[in-house]
Length: 443
Image (cartoon, rainbow, N blue to C red; front, side, top):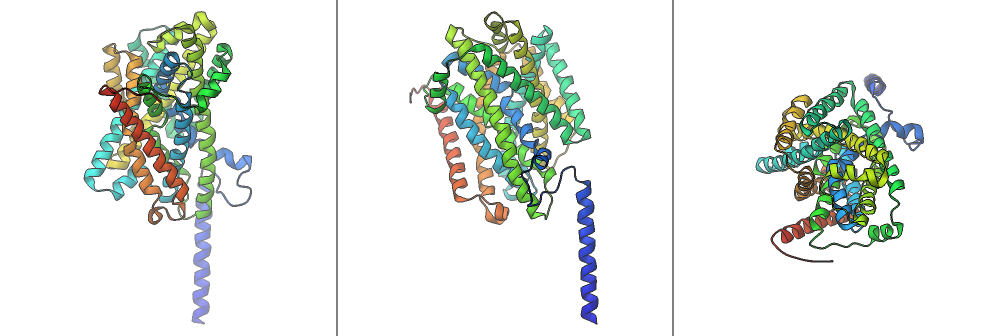
């Protein structure tokens, strides 16, 4: 009799757990993923978005600066850097998302949880420095976009850019999906703009194919190559992806979370390959229009104005719209990343509007000082590359741990590829430092 009562109570408890789980599921803004037909189009769509938000950082104005500098100065020569950087970025973003799915914590939160305080403070300082460099590039780009389109001086253009970014951040109160939709639309504008630019530029496709797959670098091109790497594999994006994926995780639902990881891989592959196509298009356009005609490009504004006689007024207008879209969208995600880093490392939560206001100030000071925007953008991306190892190494340490990740821990081949990426980044940074102190080389 007692055993029968216990079984009845256990059954009631299980039923109540099921009811609670069902109630939670009904309130979720996305479907729960089960094993059946998980790759149907209907089920994939709600999970596309987090990688697209992250991918904005891969086509921000810093990328524009390094791509235009690379294409106009070295032709198609550095296209292989973009391919390598994109493959590295896809793996690192998947690892970042996997960390968030497996642990329910972002990369910054895991650092705070598992590292000694001095290390946490150091990593927080490095990540914040990288986020500030990124934010500078993104805000400068948005300001240049408004300057091109409205024909106004740089400083008022920067103020308008700040107001526009506040507007996009305001959408966050309605949920991540609204922000994702706006950002996706802007990415689409950039992509369409560069498809049109490519058609008008009529590049040398044979040289393009060779340059994508045959590496070539020397002491003259190393600074721009490192800038391209830093502009593509961005530290703040790794922190951001590990954080925003948490909104789609269901704690305790292993089947859903396994399938969420599969969806995230699809999301990352689509979004980052689109970003790679847009970045490659920038280099190809700059090489075909500027390098082939012996035109030295010293500013993004000059690139815009030089397009007009060579490709027509419409191309110049498209360039301005695409740059503005890239600047506004990436500035929004940069603010989100800065918040994630601060909250994760330091458990300090402040308004995104206050974050945006604080990070606007250095850019406004530089604009007021009339600093060369193109050089500032390229250098900011080099800073990102130099900081990258301090983001990659903790990510590898966490995702390879079976104790922390469980069944989501990296397989040996993934660990090997991650170590290889870290080695390549550190080696390229070493070459840059060697060149900075007067060394010369050619490969």
